[in-house]
Amino acid sequence: MKPRHFLSLRDLSSAELNGIIKRAIALKSLQKEGVIYEPLKNKVLGMVFEKSSTRTRVSFETGIIQLGGQAIFLSPRDTQLGRGEPIEDSARVLSSMVDIIMVRTFEHSKIEKFAQYSSVPVINALTDLCHPCQLLADIQTFVEHRGDIKGKTVAWIGDGNNMCNSYINAAIQFDFQLSIASPQNFEPSKKILNRSKKHIHLAATPEAAATGADLVVTDVWASMGQEHEQTERIKLFRTYQVDETIMQLAKPDALFMHCLPAHRGEEVSDNVIDGAQSVVWDEAENRLHSQKALLEFLMGINYE
Ligand code: CP
Ligand code: NVA
Image (cartoon, rainbow, N blue to C red):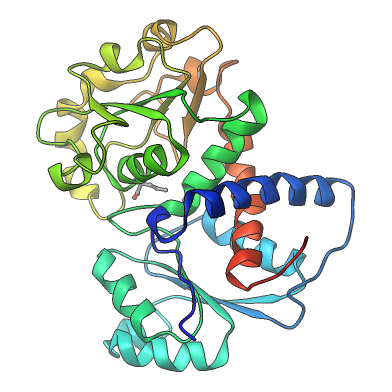
């Protein structure tokens, strides 16, 4: 039987995604109560990282250990993948030994190929195209603070990047409105924007996007792999900072999120990220709980 993969939020149904969020909240409570729960005893998670990471690495590694399993960290510097061994060969070999694999890489086509040849579930831990694991944590965080996100309005302000693409998928799957404000030529691709006219709206300015929003989200102006564009992008994105003026246009109880790492003084002002509406630390912590729920789901653990 073909394994289920999580390469994008589109790989799971809305009901399955909502189930994972609910389960993430329950697993968080169990962990806070000190309950030992090890359904993945003796299972091994392979972790392939071709880009840097703090949150993703630590949350996956901690998550699998808490569930009773183990993790193996694999970087291109010390594996044959980094010396050009074909992706399909690496996927076949790794998946013959470990039980589940997460991959952080550049081109999305690479993870698609990896998944095609893997005999075990593959999780997208960020590609240039999308970052679905982060969205599980973001939705969990919203639900914990404000209840169901269905029918709410989210403002995305900044680069039309991998995180923005995942917000587009999330808007469709979790049924909320997404208003996107990106500088000219930095909007998400038309193909992705056109996935749902009902959920996605391109705003003319950051102010227009933020007005009346329940949640305001941003991300770095230059993603991993775009460091050489940083100076140029700072100039082009200058008017897209999420600051107090932007937050005041949102609903009075609006939340602020950022997947982190953040560049204070660029995409977000100090007083917003460190202010009362910011839930970025809960959002980061929830990477652990939501990915534990995802690991359970993909490994077919039945907890009901
Ligand atoms: N948000 C996120 O994925 O962080 P890391 O790059 O530290 O994993
Ligand atoms: N857009 C950012 C997200 C980092 C978690 C990047 O790809 O670098």
